[in-house]
Length: 457
Figure (cartoon, rainbow, N blue to C red):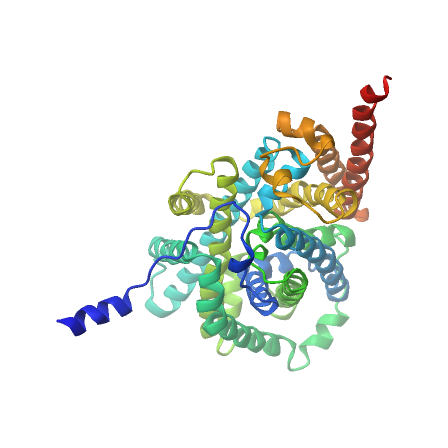
């Protein structure tokens, strides 16, 4: 009897603590640069990234597409890693960081938009998982079983999200998950570039239907979509340089690799349309492709974990007393319900919308943190117990920073104008630059206005 009790006690897995939005103390910051490299390289490997890469050709030649992929990845991942650096410095999640530039109540708007985006990404990912599993099921069992696979995928992703980032990185990705995905991805890559295919693909001209800088925007949109949640994970980093370089190197490697693979699928295997269903069939047509597809499919669950977990953390920025675990369950249920209503025609517009909202938002954060605050946020700046300085008093009292909100609006407008009127110039860099400069100017105007009463003017 005692031995049975001992066995039960050993087998019992205690749920990890659900860390809310409070700053993570130094003793709890345990993720190394390698841990974050594994996490972010894993989040950059996925079927939706393959699909995004497939959108670039034949509108661009393969050479031009690869150039756009490299340029867009460097821009987007640099923004991602710099935001992660802020999270590592402060120990706070991303939506809380925005309180310093928008005010506590002002941060509620991007929080709502972020939750919408993350629910959307979760629904897309669950849909891709179910569609891809259906193709495998059709080939192996003779029946698609879409609903069954949607349910199974949802349950697995829910359990990962409940486990939290430390459990997923240390106990799943580093011990098993990332390595089998690397092996499968290398196998697919070798197959696509082998037998002289790569020379033929590089010589194939593009149709010139896609402007180069619009393609860059589509690449930037993928790492930028992770900006609103990157600090949710880098706040657990031991050291800030490790947080920056682990995030940058991990995601840049994966994003370039899988965007390029998506383009190679179209040109090398004659993929007729860039849909998850078509990509799944293309992978299955490769020798050993069925096993590789299963591995990539399992890896897709980690992307969903991150979206679900950060949705719950973001909601806590508005409602800090709500249970994180019940929020995770609710977000998962809503996303699974949406997964049955998606069409691929919505995916392109979704990527551009994500870019317009969050590229400009980081422009404000970068201007405030790296220029005005000189890389220092206090707990009062983020949690509002007291104004950190006299200049912050009005924001503290009202919960709103008009300069931040106005600069953000300008950035979103610039992005959409550029994307629709001058797509050949690109939208990401102009939007970021406009927001950065406008915020600095408006902050200076506000500072002068606050000083005027004291001087009697």
